[in-house]
Length: 437
Image (cartoon, rainbow, N blue to C red; front, side, top):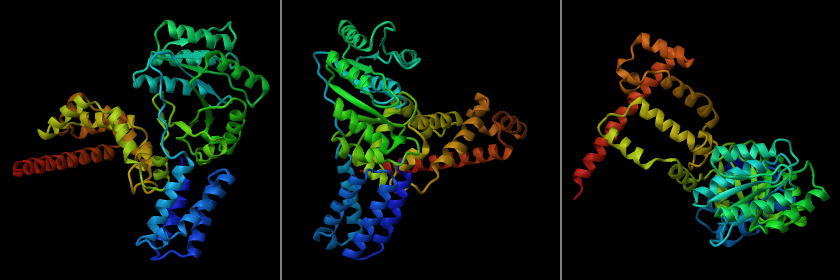
């Protein structure tokens, strides 16, 4: 997501950074290039027009033109305006503590509402809430079954009634949540292939029955401007408090994320960044703007690491490294820990200076899978003591992992180099500690 836009912006800003001074002429040229890049990213043309006018006006001000680093000032200006277009800062949802909070999901069929329902349940359960999901999509084949399956997998209760109407199901689910002492009800509603009066009427009736605290419009980011147009129509008819963009990990150009706020007046609240239930993130406009401009997003990277890291395991691992006992099994565990954080390409994009410069897909698809396969083909003793791996063992490991003996040799050599480096770093850290006053 945003990769193409990031590449375009990078080439635009390289031209400006090479100039010692900005003039009205080269600012206008840069703004035209930015405008073209945004239009190609499927951003709403009205949004682009307003964005370009604002950037040009501010860029021609004395603060930028008279700056020691005018090129960098221009980049910072674009970054701030991008963040503003997407909402400025993330909105934290405030829940009531003395009653069941209700969230209703709305959107067209195929936008990912049912999956988003489960992702929200998991997201808020991590924050200490007790959620229940209500299966109110009685029209799409297997929609109720899908939500019940997700509920069982996550151990989240699902209220369903295949014989009742959606409005009655929603009302009964709210009563059930109250009886069971739960704090949150997430209602999955039916979608259609297009907007129709019956759909809107039923959605209004469901909202009247459960009086939701939040209504989230769920849109497929891959549909670009179509998603924005549908969002505008939904907002006119029903109104919503936030949007959830699904499939943000795909190759969508990003136009929906940059357009929804300006077109509807309501910002993106969450983004789906994968198919798994934990692949949901709070939308941070300022962080996304940094990613788009290739500045990385260290804060999000640290947050992901904190969510997936086992503190006790890390302490044990630190002791093993200090005693030079780091094994291939430890290496495999760390590799799997990194995979939980997301794709390597996505993680690299969060590191300043690496966005768009490293082929993350190649790292993901080839190296990671190959390393895991090789280590998994070893016996527990071989993982703990790689020195015992002789020629015949290497052949067996290569056959078992679908790789070559050369691949096994390469991994063992890299692992040996890594252990040597860890030993040196530990020694340096120890010496530095001894020198402290």
